[in-house]
Image 1 (spheres, rainbow over the protein chains, first blue to last red):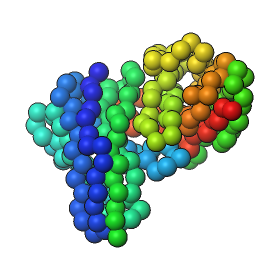
Image 2 (cartoon, rainbow over the protein chains, first blue to last red):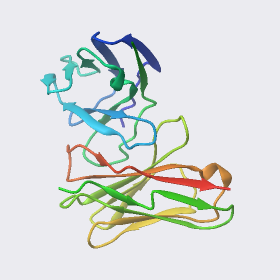
Image 3 (cartoon, each protein chain N blue to C red):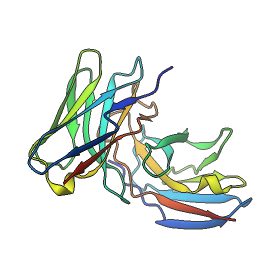
Image 4 (cartoon, chains in turn cyan, orange):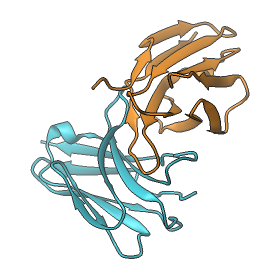
Length: 109
Length: 112
């Protein structure tokens, strides 16, 4: 079961690009990498998912190097409303689907 | 399409009582996951149900139990409530392997 390591917290300013890196050294061949965003007292919300290389959607990009031992979530031009906890999840389809501690992003004006 | 729904939104109990939390997954999703999130902390995996069977459980005592019904909805039961059981309980569902999790808004359980 792949364990993930993320920075505990990050600060940024509005309009900046934010990159959050997650380490998952023992990722398995068939594991996917998924990122979630959580606001206080709400359930986590899916942001982006990938297996390798780069994935981009309307809110973020996900960069995964060839060895897949880490991944980087990139949030372009953050705003105050992006202040939240971001979780990196590495899991195969079932099993325990265990979340790491997450990264608290605080966006300042 | 309706999302994952959880009920009740809030639940207040006293120590020693029993609590029942309910979750309805998204239509077509057969897997249901339960997580506990204490205030300011991360998500702790509780239980995973798939096709009506318990597939795995986290490091919680046996007084945390649940089940999944034929319509894939799920119930989490917590017996002999303790003060430290106060937390947000989140339910999530997914369609199958490799699919993303969809979370409900949670049940805030307060044990007095």
